[in-house]
Length: 323
View 1 (cartoon, rainbow, N blue to C red):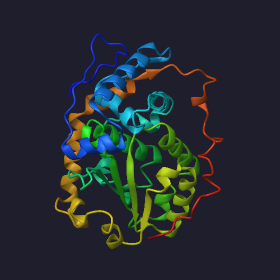
View 2 (tube, one colour):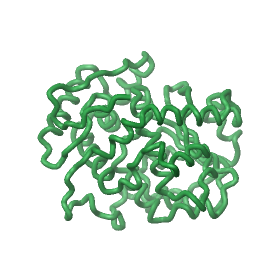
View 3 (cartoon, rainbow, N blue to C red):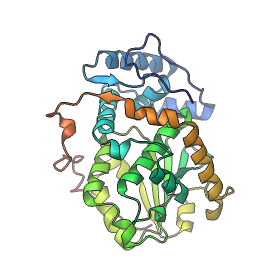
């Protein structure tokens, strides 16, 4: 796959987009404020801002990439430009968490093979992409939270090349069956703090729902801590289910892997995902070349230990319960 230009001020811009179907066009208009004229106006404004930005050195300026930020912030230019800046900052400062998206990396390749995370081929009735995770795929003797984060990032960046994914958002389903304390210990509280900070402020992803199935009691304790750090919108979209029947009330089981009630075997889905990662390898690896100058006293170098959480997040935090 050809690699998009990283010239912050190219002579011409890539405006190629696959048109959305009628359902998603209506969704974009109603929920994202998207209109063809506004879209072009905001793309032009964001490109001009990038070209004049004193610290951005290299970044993609093609339409599908910039729409990731505009749609995430419903075409509010100030918010979208701030999100893009924060996104570049975490890619530069935390490349070991959000970069190095090379499917040929032995550890990342092995993690993909476990089924820890992969996209499903069909969108749901609302046009949302489904992502599926077999959480026990994290071998605690081999993989770390950084490996898991990089696979999440690789999946998100790959899916974000789809106009439908950017518009409809996604649903994430975690299978927590067979999870042990060793699995849970892969991620520390400081890891959760960093990842929550990124999810709240720096990642242009539109999570519509996150479902945890068969979550052990120890896992609920960690989930409760993570929820304290999540913003109110994300907290309202996270659900825990005691079994698959509970999940099926909210997610169409026909869309899941065959082992969970769907049509396509998990191994086939994983192999298809890995093939896509290989095809898009040059593009995924090019993300490491995007660059922004970050001063030593920049707010982006804050380690997050004293972050201000969303207003009232801890005080109004609701204890997570299994449905």
